[in-house]
Length: 493
Image 1 (cartoon, rainbow, N blue to C red):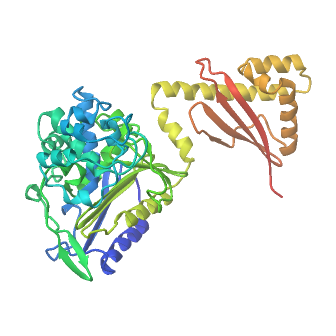
Image 2 (image 1 turned 30 degrees about the vertical axis):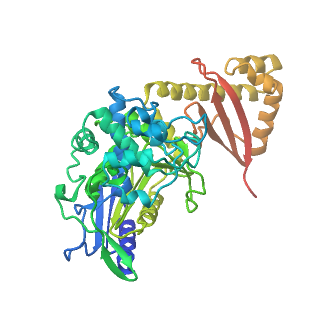
Image 3 (image 1 turned 90 degrees about the vertical axis):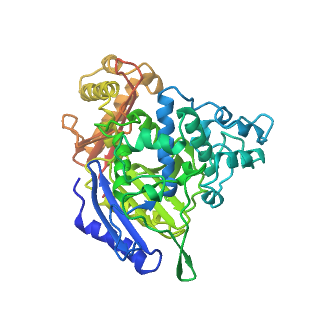
């Protein structure tokens, strides 16, 4: 995909300004498309007098949750664990937790994956728990937990929930959590720069910093432990861009193979649990949570998948467009730097610079047509368009009578159509609409749009405007039309 050098220059300047204005000691970014990392840049001092680059190692904090979710899905695919099993199957100590109501279910792995286990949001407490042992976590559970809601009913971002998923992974895999992630996801994808400790890193490891009244204070590196599943990974722009590309490819015409099936990767990127606006008050799009990933709904560009990471001394973000496969990753080494803000603006600018030949809904339908069963639906709606076009021309003939009008309609439409509005009334409305805009019923469509494969809208030219025709098929294999709308759209004067 060709990305404008001018847009890349604007993006680079934005990240550079964050170093210049003292937001962070260093900042690094990368842009990816379906082919991989296509551009990157870095600014500031990473700790050795050099600017960071695409191979400089940062903590990615909660971006780790996408790897945690992916690893669990590999175990589900093998039948080693069930997403709807209670967490007590893997973490017996959770049985000591008093649930919020007598009829409340024990949180399942699916609830925990989608941040709906009922547990309170636990930033920043959980960020300091990474190195505790499994015994320490069991002691926390036996001491009891608070709940903000009945499990399975509401979204609340819970790190503790993902720590429990880490335990479930170890239980099902028969090896420690970090080993399972490495063997099942990182190594098969060649993500050799993504590791669970600074000692394992191959590149230069940046030290996290905290702003203490204008002076940067180095933050200690925590080691792997019971809470590593919430944010324990170190990585690079190059590796995280590779991971984002792999996830994004699952929605493309030719999904990349990997340890997590394309179907499971698509499932992870679905809007499975609505995120209330009060949780993300600054969000400009409707937001939900999937499996270890946030999913935003953009009216123009469709789904945008993302996750941020914040640890003491670090800020990370990754995001991509499902429709276009274009994405951004970025890291900074300052507590609460919120690198998500410039990363979000960067992707918005990249998408705005793309040529938009068709609207996002129509593009999604075109992509879905690669699925054989959906392709049949697309073919059926195309055939129905031709049949409806012939029907409208037949209705517009001067010598047609009511019986013929009904027979023509019945050959194309389902019986509900004349029940919803009589055939004769539909013909009169068609003739009026044609007269209003001077429509040419023999002309080729000016434009076509779809919101789903079984629906199609097209426009015919006229001397004083255009005619909009819309059809929707019934769910019958015969491809019959259940909705037929004809609307005049006069030229504004």
